[in-house]
Length: 134
Image (tube, rainbow, N blue to C red; front, side):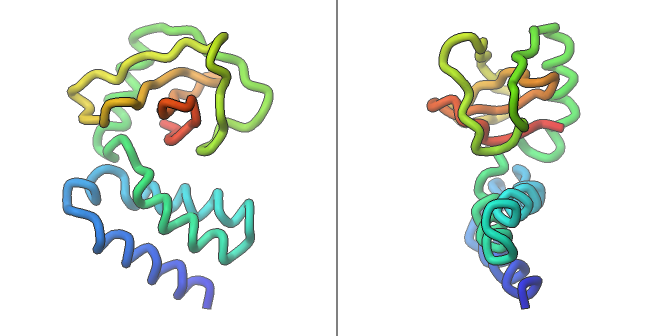
C-alpha cells in the first residue's frame, strides 16, 4: 500500500506542475524527498517527502553534470561540515562562502551555491540546503 500511496502522490505532484517545472529535476526531487521523508518518518513520511521533493528540484537534471563541472573549474574551497550533507541542513551564515549561480542555469533568484564536504549544494536565503548536486 505504501508504494501505491507514493506513486499516487508523486504522479499528482508531477501533474500539478507546469512542464518546465517537471523538466527541472522532478523525478530526482521525488527520489530525494522520499528518502529524506522515509528516514524521518517511515513509509508515510517517504510518500509525503516524495511529493514535496518534486517541487524541490531546483537545478534541471540535464544541467547537473555541467554545473558540477562549472563548480570544479572555479576551484573554490570546501566547507567542512561535521554532519551529513543533505537537503534541509541549515549552514552557518558566516564561515561559509556562498556564490551566485550563473543565469545560464535558470535557477530562481535567492538560491546560491557552496561546497560542503567536497559536494556542491544549492542553498536558499536562510542558508538551508535545498539541493545536493551529486
